[in-house]
Image (tube, rainbow, N blue to C red; front, side, top):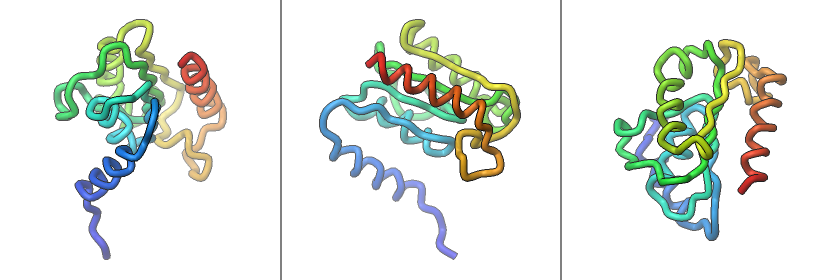
Length: 143
């Protein structure tokens, strides 16, 4: 069985991100938030970030400061074991406050499912996913 190498994944993500030209919005779901949150903090040119079902506390992630005025949305279920009950929701609220009232938003949805936006999984919640996607599109339309 092949082992997972997080550092190799990070290098691959960084290599890919270095090929982007122009403004970019980073998005990630669950573990993918690691990169969607880290890249705007470490690579110039980000226009925003969409974080679904995870968030890392500023100051504990070694990503640096959140860029001033950079829009961010965080979405998760209000009883999700991995998001709401393990500190990510608190981290999301802190991140939104750091980003500012006009640029930081946290949205919670009723339920306890993790990966509720992934339509290929049994945890998919079409109502919550539709609301999250509509809100993300709204953010993108304002950029």
